[in-house]
Length: 99
Image (cartoon, rainbow, N blue to C red; front, side, top):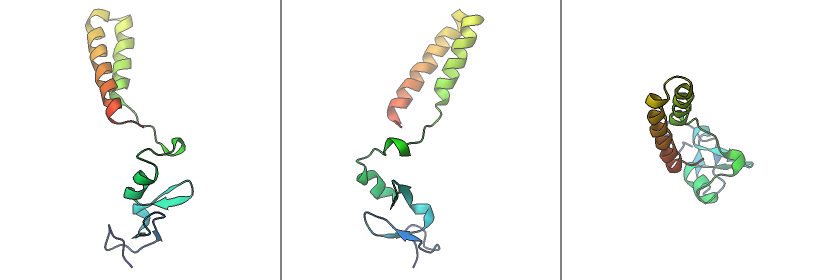
C-alpha cells in the first residue's frame, strides 16, 4: 500500500483520527497517538498541547536586543531608534506566528 501524500513510499501506519494510511514522514506522534497534518490541527482545535510546542527563534527580537545593548553603551542617539523599530517589527511578527 502506498502513502496518500507520497505515492512512491510505502505505508507505515494510519492516522488515529481519519484512519487514512500514511508514511512516517506524514505522521506526527502527539500524546502517544499518531496524526496526519490535517487531523492534528482539528484534534487540538488549532493549538497543540504546550508539551508539543516548539519554540522558534525570533531573529528580529535578537537583533533589537543587540542594537539596544550596543546603543546603551556607545551610540544611544543613533541606534536607539533602530532598536525600537526592530523591536516593534519583532512584536508584530510574533503575533502572527504564535507558538
